[in-house]
Length: 316
Image (cartoon, rainbow, N blue to C red):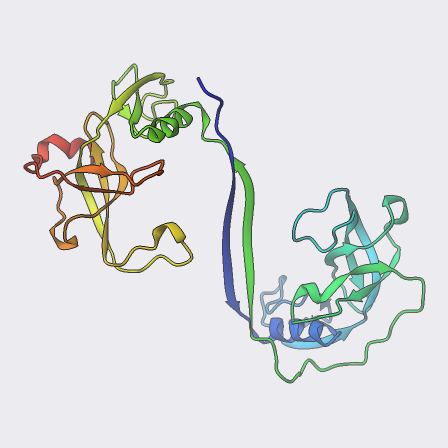
């Protein structure tokens, strides 16, 4: 058995959202080096501001400026900063209650080491040199031993307010397909498709998972399936995939479930070589490989008679 495969994998989605009046004022204020909170009906000042009181659920719009200085309420040392974090050298994550606020804001504290950080220490905002209306306009906090900074009393009204943000959500990790799928991938490299047979129910699973999802027992017996198969169900794709280089295909096209001969369930594949409106359940197809590819580019009709429904109904 060859070594188990592994590869880096990134899942990323840029989430675009609009801002209400409170969040718009808060982020626009950061761009202008002003920190705004919101005052609740009972006089508490919440920073960062929210649009509804977390205690009473009442809508709140009374914006109030707080100071750029504050007090650390709790902290944790970050020995190994990751990509995208505020600082690229070790720093402390801190909760800071800014002067004039009743709640704390989470951000980074630039300190030489954990011995230099303590609950109750005084800090101030270090503003980013270039600001755009985002939480990153606060570059970090830094230790401060001067007098408290008095806010100017800004009312939260700005010209050219920030009305929306793009928040990229990203996950980087190393993916390993495991023993069963490693064998499956290696077989595809030789233009073969293999599954694994359950020793109990005798179904052949493609791609294999290393265990039968029905019986819950391990699978080890490899079984070559295909290359031909039968379209069981399908859909017509009318929207072009965005930001996906390997799906740069003109629409409309057909994506189908294909039960390869000898397999106990269907896998996904694109159907080509036939007008999209002629694809049908029971259509017999075969894989088409491109030079150097490690998996079929698409499936095309074989010219055989359509399969009878009874032959593939169990894998729908």
